[in-house]
Length: 187
Image (cartoon, rainbow, N blue to C red; front, side, top):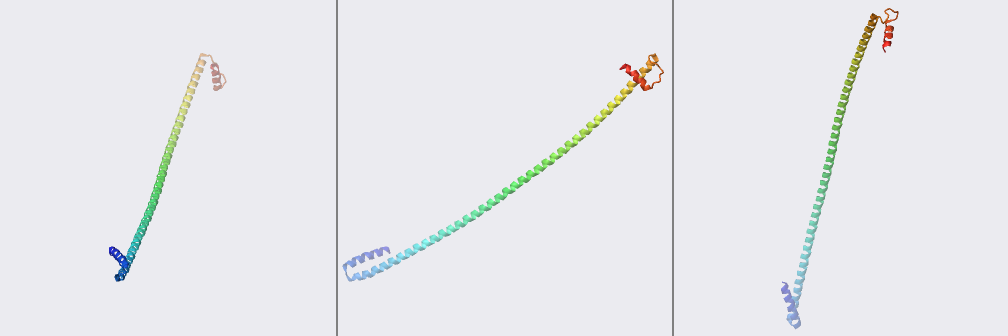
């Protein structure tokens, strides 16, 4: 069609130069060709404008779609971050709780050990006191026995001295006084 318009324009120039009655026909064809060209140009511009508007709408729709997708992605990432933070907080709380439980167990074990040591030391102390008391009683009994034995030896010796005649037999002194006097010579 564009070729027909070009041909028509060429004929009109040729006819217009001649000045013949065909030139008036050529003018009509030329005007018609211009009208067709104008209509074609308008249609092309309209189609181009429609295509441009459609492309713009598509681009805007795509941009809105991508913006919505980006918004959803951001919200998803925020929810994941919030969920991860909650998980970390729960994990931290669990670690703190388990540490508290371990500390409580260690304290309970330490208290038991302390009680055990106190009990053992108390038993050991009581046993040592009882052993010391028993030893003291035994030593006291041995000392008493030794005293009795020594006293018996002294009494025997005094009686032997009386029998031999080295000590006078009858004096009016008490027995204790006699023993003291007799022992004083030997010590």
